[in-house]
Image (cartoon, helix red, strand yellow):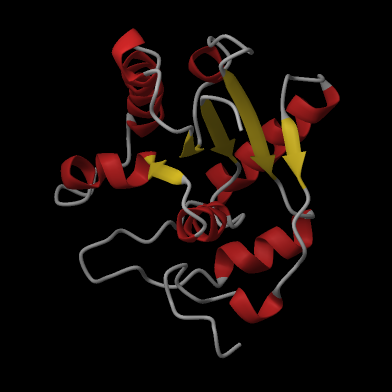
Length: 170
């Protein structure tokens, strides 16, 4: 794993679930959505989040690549939606970008069956914007962006569950 690995993909692709599994395996994981939540959720802010995510990418890069922090274990950042100019500005020797992009019909099912995270959390419901991002990520593949596409086994028993739910009985 590179010093910083950015995990991107449209809402509902399974990024948070993947991140939770990595965290249980001992990997350092942070999610941009969780970092912004205290600012955006109480006021139900939905505009400007992409720009804020780009700023968080720069902030994480500044912290993680600081010479005094180079001995920390690698970090997986669940970036979700992040502007290309921020995401691809790093050194490929230090950073990698993973793309989680399930087949479109499966992704649509996953997106529409996402569970509510909590009564104080905003549930993502901008399906049109999500579809735009799905197409954008498809273009990244065609344009041969420096990304690695994750191919994860489909686990239908997880659709509709929170990522931190105990799955040992499933």
